[in-house]
Length: 172
Image (cartoon, rainbow, N blue to C red; front, side, top):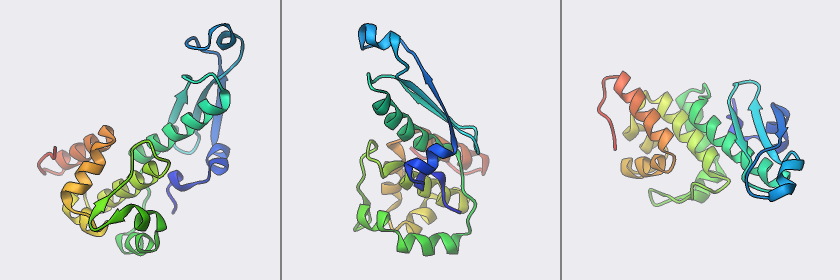
């Protein structure tokens, strides 16, 4: 099953309730007359994200979609077995493009980041939150995986919560 982070914008939006709102903030009088703020709620999961910092509704929609992808990456796990996950990962152009020589290269503000984060967290969940096993599957070093997760602090916090519940040590 494909994680929602990998869906095209149109498909993801089709699965969302979109609320347009007026908000205060930059933009002056124009800001108070038009509904530029966007709140997206992903119906299948109930997760939501919003954006209101731009003057343009289109810009806020783009930002809200990115934030929703991050929210889904951190808080929604896709059930998949490890051999199938490894097979899909080997075919993944995204991972081939972003991982070279055991290092991962992606900015946390880049469009690819939420999908890669979802993959990493799904793999961690499949591996019972064993970061070394997951790093091996992703063809990274353990420290590279942790460095990647630190780019989204909620992801590292989730890993540590799950490790603590399993009686494993926290990672920093």
